[in-house]
Amino acid sequence: MPGFWELVLLLIICLLLFGARRLPEIGASLGKGLSNFQHSLRGNKDKDSPDDSNPPQDKH
Image 1: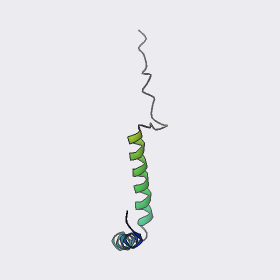
Image 2: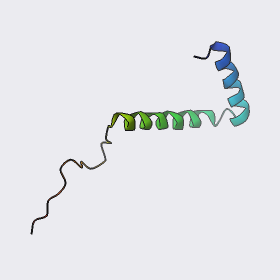
Image 3: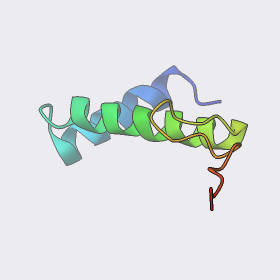
């Protein structure tokens, strides 16, 4: 686990590389990516995705 000074140094490097305007965008996209990754590991389905447990049956 990184300590306080390591996190401060990392933040300064990120500010120099990306600038203050891009950091919130990068943080938001990183958070969404991690959230999606965790959901996929747990096997959770999206609310918008169709339910595949009961496939439609052909009526001939």
